[in-house]
Length: 282
Length: 222
Image (tube, each protein chain N blue to C red):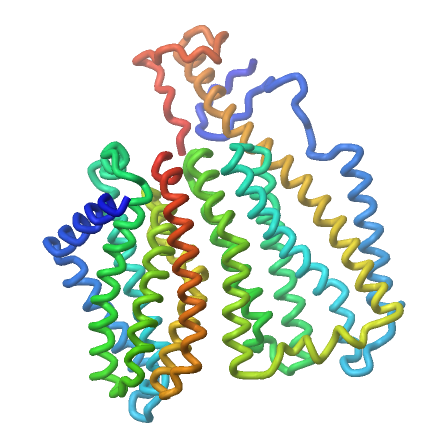
């Protein structure tokens, strides 16, 4: 065991954590998944930019559809997984599901941001403005803010138990909130104007290679989502482990500094007056 | 449960009555919001009067946030949270009591803000039944959701910044619903407003149930 002479707080990773300590979050299965998603992205780019025809009405602007619609779907999927994971965590105290909820909330936030950004890029040539107060746009923006709220709670500077439980309550309410906000925003807009712009623009007329492109987009984005989710989950798992081990490591370090025997770190020996052991709490 | 709720609500309201913080700070802040809107918008061309429903409810939300923060600040000092937990009171009762206390304060605030918009924005109130129903149901929703999210943010160093971020998106349906219902009432078309009351009622019931069920686990930790 190495002893660092410069006493640093916080993130000291112990020299020999455990024999089976992973050095990356990858595994053969995820590498395969990653390769499949990257190949899929390449094919989707070719499909979206070259192989599919222009839209009669929208021209080239329609091509953003192949990433916009799948990312919106993934955003809602992630949101649903967050609520599911939070519910199971509160019910069974399963840390595994808590981390699934956290990881999918982050991904949902990313995909919601992608949805909003691509939607605005599409709106500019189609409607002439980046933003209209359409029901879908507004409720997607609210979904993004709700997800940021969940992530803010989950990343609180507090104990894991506090963070996890509070975030789980927020996560549990996330999907119901999304539904209520969606419904209210829809009523709010439809009382003032006719049905959503999407209903009479796209949807009914899509067919052939364009339909295949969109379907392929769902598959590719599903793969990307699964790939990122697995990695993010493993990273979160390791983060929690390091946070747990940081304290042990710091205690061992302080003991070594004070000239005590650094050998038995797990037994919580009564702290000596000369060795401050409680400084790792940031 | 209800006896505990009344005890907690009574305690909170007595505290507010004696400390006068709500009266001396939150109410003036609410009035200030009304005046700030007049600065921001054109006060002479009837814009304020036309926008009254929205401005009124935004003012309610902002000053209500202050009342909510206050409701949990008084529990933060002297380990009050622990004593509340050790008191043997039913957690559901504590939730309902705190929500009731916040609700009563919000109702007082809403009445004062109503007088404020009537005087400052020269708004003519009509459709009283719908107005009163909106105020009651929306207040129940804000108080229930606010108390639930308030305890989530309570006891943390970042609570002042966290609560608005958590609560305002959640309260968006309440803002939409109550504003539309008020618009309908003021436009003398109450039939348009009643469906919104339904939405507000669903919201209030959902959050009351969530709070009654979820408050126990939340009080236990930290």
